[in-house]
Image (cartoon, rainbow, N blue to C red; front, side, top):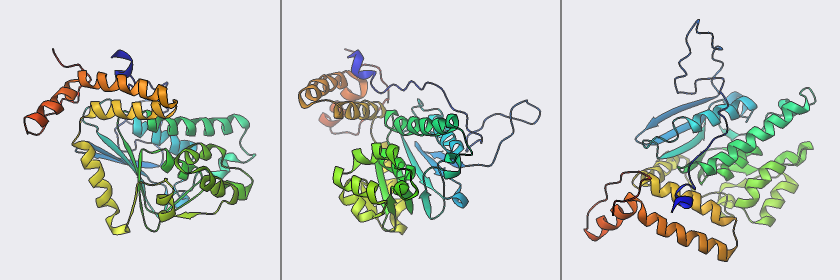
Length: 301
């Protein structure tokens, strides 16, 4: 069972330090020798297993600047292995979810080294979302473009208000959305994704739902309620089982059909050796609610 039960274990290469506290205490004090806190680019709160990460730079349309990406990565990785954390919701302040990269960072005023760091950090954050042991939900209420659309596509689940729109408009300013295309092209059908990429024109929330970018579309006044319903349902399940299932899902998607069934069949067997695997079955047979341990340990025989 060893291989599959280790699928979800996160091994971050390094934690990029966010230039702000982002809702989590950094322990820095005056005279401590640490650099001073800068303007907050994200805010966070966590209650009952649900971590809310809010992009909080509405004056700049919540652009995914290098600093914002580092903040987001810090907020995601904070105490990520805690059993108390069950799901992450990413949302934004203001009418724009995210306008993508900060084009000022991509101008000739910055050198190639900086450009490389921006795109590599962005790719690292987007990939990280699918490697986390907990589900990540995008809660969108507004416009999501370029890398902002990429962020929505990279989340496990995405809920949007009816007024939301999505676009990959880089082609209009001479910078094709090649990195957003990685996530968008895996979430939408090829022809819909390429139309978005070639024209730069936005699609509505309902079309985004129709073509696979979103999980559901709801009225704006129901967005918080409907997103929380999904998050609370996830919180009712076993963290360890969800972690194993999420890791397995993404791994099998990269395999051919026979290899996928071979791998997932072994994972199903391994799942049965988990404490929560047996607890869930016993609770069903005994007609009671399961008491989850959220442990990756195996059941005693």
